[in-house]
Structures are given as C-alpha cells and as structure tokens.
Image (tube, rainbow, N blue to C red):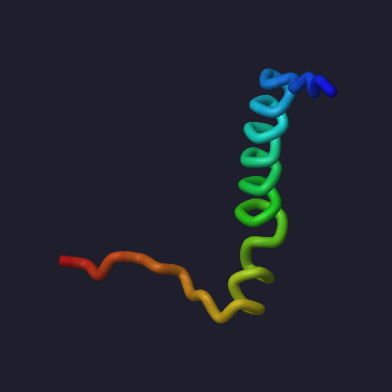
Length: 47
C-alpha cells in the first residue's frame, strides 16, 4: 500500500492555521480569552 502525501498542502494548512489563530486570539477574542485564562497584559515596567 502506497500512501501519497501532499507536503505542500500540509505546509499551506499549517501556515493558514497559524494566521487564523493569531487573528482569533489577538483581534477577535483577545480580551475575553485573557480574562478567562487569567492572563493580564504583560507590559514591561518603565525605566
């Protein structure tokens, strides 16, 4: 049995997933996600 793998399709899907997750967590539900997970804005202290 020979399995054919389309590596280009896997790479494109992985990159698309990265961008979709970035938009999902940063732009759309960033504040809600931070509130639910208990994460606060991590900003460096002023010098």
